[in-house]
Image (tube, rainbow over all chains, first blue to last red):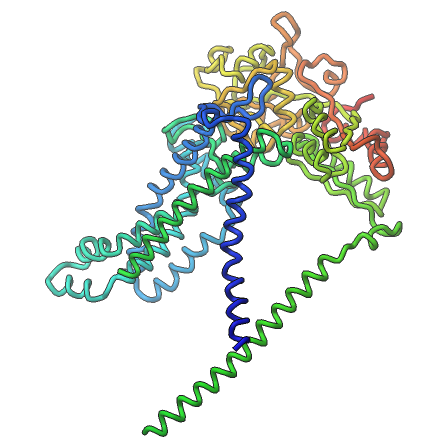
Length: 287
Length: 311
């Protein structure tokens, strides 16, 4: 009947708008990126200094920005991992029903806090704390940023990992307990390895969220564009660069296009992370 | 048994048909509501706001340094002219000039001169930027109150910010590395400092680019080996939390502590004019506002905000 076809068409359009939007974003970012490469070459991006505003020579090296983002993301993931895995294991395996009912909503609450509020908290509370704990001249370093990002990544990783852990068939746990393993041994040797693909996907999704975080890192990392692997130095992430500089650029200038290149790199990175994570999750659920 | 099965199956089918009908009705009504609201929103409203009795809107965008001053001006202006509504935003002088060129603001507040490339870009887009000097400002170099250093020459400040000096002991302070604080590159203060103090050299990559003046003040008051630069108004407001350095133009000159009088007399070496830029000569409400800022009441507000009057 034509009514059926009409409804199918409407639903199809509603679903495809999201694909359309993503395609449009890629197209418009790509357009400006390509225009950058018409004036400057790829080697210009490979510089070790990012100096977009200068009386001497404009340098658009994105290496410091990429390493800054990577350092903060990797640190944040390393910090978040133990907390989130232990949290997920506790909620799905160990906690009683009432405990679970209380814990889960509170963890979900963390996702609801605006990132600028978390950044403010970091600037006023966490940075001095880090400074005094490690006896540093200042608390505005990559480590503080990583701690804040870990705070934001934990709820994401916990919910998906908990999902994955609960999907482990009961028969696995029952068999393990039946042959005499303790609960801890079951969790460590049977449940977690069985849920491992899901946990890895959860971590990747958490990383995807963290790499795109802007306000919190902008307020606490100090934003100096240096290439460093030390968590005690100030770094500049790609996201903070775009947020801080996009307001001022004259529309259509080289600096404007360079920022689009940075944005495009960020877009591609998060896209790949999310796609791989979704693939792993899908495969895991079907397994 | 067979009849029972048959009747329940029929019942389900009927129920499903009804449910589908309801869903269709819901969908169609939501769809039509969406279309109607989009149609209503896209009706042009030019006819309504062109009336003289309606409120006049004015936007001022730009310098973070000037945002308190411009807000104070806007508030008092709106008290005298209740039919005008002014919106003031910061974001940096660069942001304001970009907005003026893109025609997304009526007035741009800038703590630096407009650059030649920006003038050219504006002309390309049919915008003729017109400059009006409205106040003077000094840039204070601030350090933590517990820092033993009180005087620096311009050259020393330059060497600190370009990265030539790395340690406070090189300028007579304790043996600690500098924590160098700066504004973001969108700030007029950043560009002015670069042009006049750094003599157009680049900032060291180790300089930390803070998102706003208040962040610099917060960090300087908390971290003992930090050094930063802020507008005089902000430094005076944060008197107990930060210490202003006296600046010597060169080794032989007198050390001058920034204050209103020395900025006006020109004795203080790091001072600059503050501007309001408009597209073409100011007319109408824009002209009324700028005249207000230059007038007696406006300049009194300048003094109260910690800046320096132009006359």
